[in-house]
Length: 630
Image (cartoon, rainbow, N blue to C red; front, side, top):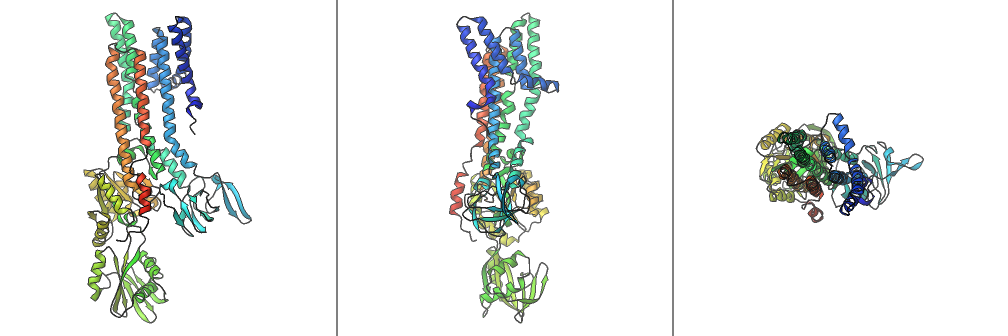
């Protein structure tokens, strides 16, 4: 971890250089030039120690850098007899480099803090009793014993016990999650008041939390447009500055005043060096990405971060993204003389062995369920069987006509329900309306996006009527229904061709669209591996209100990067003529340059601040904890 500045040994050479330089100036002002030069020379050595060896090593490998410009300027100043100015240059540049390193360390601290969420040791159940082992030694299928208030060391599935988990440190969600047997849990969560036994589904060194940290630490390796812009400017600028300084010195030789113009060439060398430009983007990107990981948004690259800040349209999958992906029975309509419970029981009896999601919803809603015999399934249509001597058929309206209940079927479909027809002995007994409920925060998320001027589109494989009913409740007017994975990808390609578009999804069928979008956003906790792999951004939580928060965070980061690049270029443009015509000397140019670099670093660190949209998230979660029924 980054030590306090007064104990940071990386600042020691700069501190020594600064103290010696100040003492040298005091002796010079006191009329003691020789001791003053000695102290200034010592200050020069202390400051140069931090960058000259590295500059020489890079030069031997054929690489030029800002450190080389500063080295040449310092050597030239000494040869011209300006030891004090050379010492000032070395002190200020070494200080700026040390502050830059601290800034980068600070930006990465959030990632190290995530790793600290994993406990050092964990209790594991063995045949002879519980034993305590290092968390790194956990292996898949080990059974962990997690007591009240303890952190979960790796991903797993609860095998015994019921409790609540605080996942806020990992997912950014403030509402505790209730878990019991068969529920999945993630590393870094804090257990509530009861002991849980959890079967590990990941090793201690390779779980969702360590993967998040690895992704974020590698994020700045792929650079975005602004990073590449800064590199494109800075990379040729170093040799250009060297050539320009040489031409200025050559001009002095030609006009017969080499001393003056060689000195100005050294000043130009410093004035045009791209110190601030080189750090303008990286410190901003790392700060912003590290900060995003703290509130549950994993951004896989600097390029993805920058593109996220350009988004003008967001396409959302319906099932599992806007909705819970947990179908439930919300309405039952019966024919005259048929009881509601009978319709549910008959349907549940024949659906009892089916793996279809609608079957699970109907079975859960039924009370007493009789045993069904002679069950057979017509793929994509429905299922038949014998229940207590009755021939029961259960299926969709394309297979079984709702008869006299046709108007009810239309009304249920208009409300976003999937209509299941139940037939007994050849007569329509009733209709069951099953609906995947809208997430509690979906409508608020769409409203927040619209307030930011971002267009929303729903993409779904569901039928047109159901899709529009759900979209209306969510506040989305642009609906693309009955979309196959290929159709979704084509729709995203068309949208992205006209404006930067993000796709939000969680299923395997969303993977092509996620890969096609300007930025693909995967719902990380319940999302499929294919979706997360295809996406540029992944949520460790599932609250959709992270979307507007993440977009606002990225836009703010882009603004900071743009301001940093503009400031860095402005400093070069302003200082160059002042240096060329002798208005500013070496010490003045060095001071302005390094102050500008510190300003750029501090401005970049502002990108780590939490977006304004996110503090509202906890309150919104608490107020919308109850399900929303559409």
